[in-house]
Length: 468
Ligand code: FAD
Image 1 (cartoon, rainbow, N blue to C red):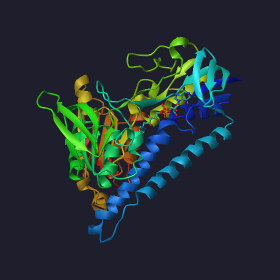
Image 2 (tube, rainbow, N blue to C red):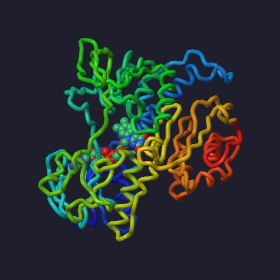
Image 3 (tube, rainbow, N blue to C red):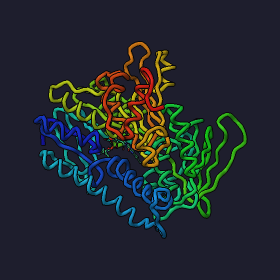
Image 4 (cartoon, rainbow, N blue to C red):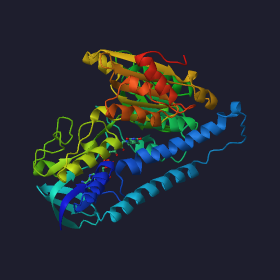
């Protein structure tokens, strides 16, 4: 069978690319080895984790978050089986939605493992072992990523006691003690879920901060907030061993700066030390497709690999491993293959940690601006001075706006607080249009809203805030 485009992988990168390319009039085939569409994000990533974050947040809130509002509950009980059923139903609705969109856009979907045979040819091997060869003018590799493990440490992940994020969204009972190896987004989100449901959570992190790469001030404040919620942190700690014991597992770690090793025991250990590009069984070496030094498919600024007609997008290429980055690359590459000028603005990709409170960030951090020698001004506004936040008892956190000292162009916005993941988008749009802190500060914001803190932080950047 012959197509304009064969997309390998149906995650946010692949499925969005397929739909966009079909909308632009191209004939598309998608190959997916999983039984359902939607990739890591819909099946075992973004969507199920957010379903559990929301449900566990409701549990925590009902258990001890509303007395001061005059709302009292008694006998709040956790029904973990039902919570997991909610998560599964949400996943099903989303993956079925992708199947519907493929049909609607007349996209041919093939269940099986895709292997690139060379320019324009892909072999599909179904679970039954049956193979067929598809042909196309262009191929898009969108095979995503997989759990990376701990560098230099042999870890036997059984998804029951020693778990990755995949096991972390599917435990059938709340562990009494949970060790999370890795203080990045996934570790902190899933750590929060189990902490709220009653686990004693300890995060062991190599760096001397959590959320490495995020704004330092945001990271420190966020750590204090999570500590207040009961999570414990061992920072600057290098894990040297993770192993099962008779009644759980133990983690051994030593100070990165040197010193005595320490061992912690727990009922479960979540290994959340990052993800790596997934290119297994893709046939890339034989097809002559080059990888970079981190095993990612190498691409140019138009998503082209070194082999003509073969493109790559999403987690399998460089850049932040985020679903919306993969989606936007999917749109851009579809436009390019259709003869248009697709592109992605990597300076304005928001990142969100969906804990409570949330952390959201777009653009440069103060640390990055300092390292690049860019003169900047910073304006900050705390939610303690925001009327709506007081009304909702969501006064933890702040907004920080960073703008170029000479031009006032906004270079970065960082928010820690309730609803940060929604509020960040006004900053993202502003940055997409090259706006200044004065543009943001002079834009009318509805009162009373949490977003007024964004306006006030912008006012603080170019002159003075009103309400503090
Ligand atoms: P993937 O979603 O990984 O999809 C790749 C697909 O390709 C898979 O379905 C795989 O089965 C298939 N495949 C691989 N090889 C082959 C082959 N040879 N033949 C056929 N099919 C193949 N990102 C966010 O932006 N927000 C979040 O809140 C968020 N939360 C996350 C929570 C967790 C627990 C995890 C693990 C990740 C989370 N992410 C989140 C990251 C996000 O899931 C990824 O960035 C995103 O899924 C990448 O999309 P992709 O299309 O590149 O790859």
